[in-house]
Image (tube, rainbow, N blue to C red; front, side, top):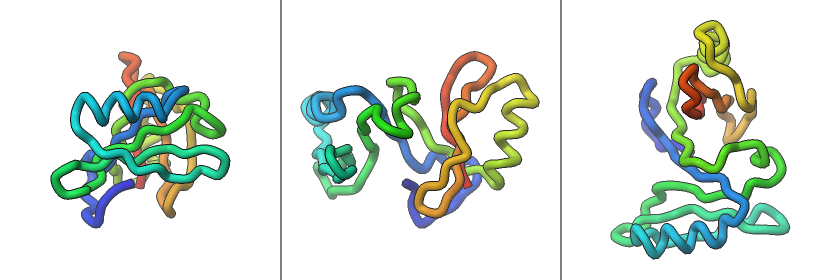
Amino acid sequence: MGGSEKTVGAIEWRDLTVNDAGGVSDFYAEVVGWHKQPISMGDYDDYVMNLASNGGSVAGICHARGSNSELPPQWLMYVRVENSKASAEKVVELGGEIIQGPRIMNGETYFVIRDPAGAVLAIYS
């Protein structure tokens, strides 16, 4: 996730969690021209989707297994915040909910949240 730039408010990653990551990653490869790169998760592969032009990673497509089993099957954006724990507290205070988290990935703490309208977003720092 993320790049070298750490700008608060920036969308730094996006992924999709579904039951059939292999089939859905093939779908997006055909529809938008991404190249899929398998990433071993032990006994199965998730996928990083790369641009055909330069190989740059643009998204992930993951299986709804393990800690990802409760994520909804929709594109999830990851937005950098200054302090993910403080932002998560604000989510609840303002009528949203925490779907998942805190979780640590690549040294960053993140939460998957649902806003009062029902939209889902990941926040991390």
